[in-house]
Amino acid sequence: MTLQAIRYHRGHLEILDQLLLPDVSKFIPLHNTDEGWMAIKLMQVRGAPAIAIVGCLSLAVELTKKDFSTRKELKEFVHEKLNYLVSARPTAVNIADAAAKGKTLINQLIDNEDIELEDIKLSLIKEFENMLQADIDVNRSIGRYGAEHILKNCNNEPVMVMTHCNTGSLATAGYGTALGVIRHLHEHNKLDRVYCTETRPYNQGARLTAYELVHEKMNASLICDNMAAACMASNKIHAVIVGADRVVANGDTANKIGTYQLAIIAKYHNVPFYVACPKTTFDPNIKSGKDIHIEIRPEHEMTTLKGIKIAAAGISCWNPAFDVTPAELITGGIITEYGVFNPREIQDKFNEFDQQ
Ligand code: MRU
Image (spheres, rainbow, N blue to C red):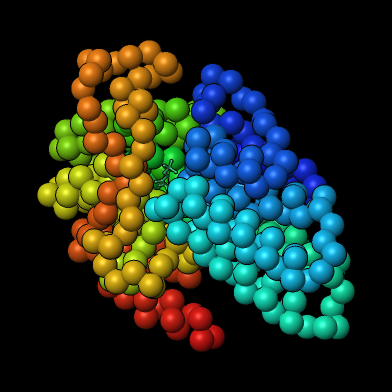
């Protein structure tokens, strides 16, 4: 049984509170977009795909319970709420992509006089509900393409891999992206060992990825972030696989802080470096990684651990949540639901799929 962190049926949404993991498994209800926004901001739910899905489902729940007297009122409400949800965390693009699609849909439906107001609302709710299963399907494709690509370069022998942050069932609707690749390897007895980084300062690796790896009984070892180079020097690591919050037109990729240094270390050790993400993580509107807005998180997430001070009082901090890995360091490729691509080709590849 893979973990399920989002529970939904029409009018009802609950998420596993990731601030309490791994010690406490507690689901909390989200009744509306205010609560959805806050859960995203506080990182009770996190990970680019999960942020998008939970944000949109919180709007679905609110829409289910609300009546509208005019088409204009419904349209303005949906636009306003989607803009609000996108503002919760700025770097992950998936929620902006979902919001743009939601706005396009409502605009089209509103303009069609043959469709009743209540049916317009229902279509939008269904559109958001479909995101749950669609994300799992996409992740399974990513898992298969990524695993096949890695194994092809390793004579189909079991592999040792390294991953960063959490990209699994807790960061998606289920299965995961980078962790989906690792899951696929494990399911096919092709995973020798996975090294997962602690992922300071918020410890998504130690708290969340380690939780998923233990849950699924994978051969796994936790390392501190500053052990990655030594780990690659001492072990035959076949691939580093990470997720992404935003891949831009030239293939540069924003992901959890620490990803960039892992890519540099991987290059030095000749270890292929892969980014695994759905097409919804691609942002063709930004040309280069230099222009990605990197979220800065509060200092206390660095200076305290579960409320206990671990840094000298009075020190000031620089706490970016993400960094940018240049395309040239993504040496293995970008693993998507359409296949594995050279980061420099990603825009052309996605254009091709859009035209099909
Ligand atoms: O700050 P977080 O925990 O939301 O950051 C998550 C990551 O950086 C993930 O690698 C990324 O969102 C991909 S999740 C499938």
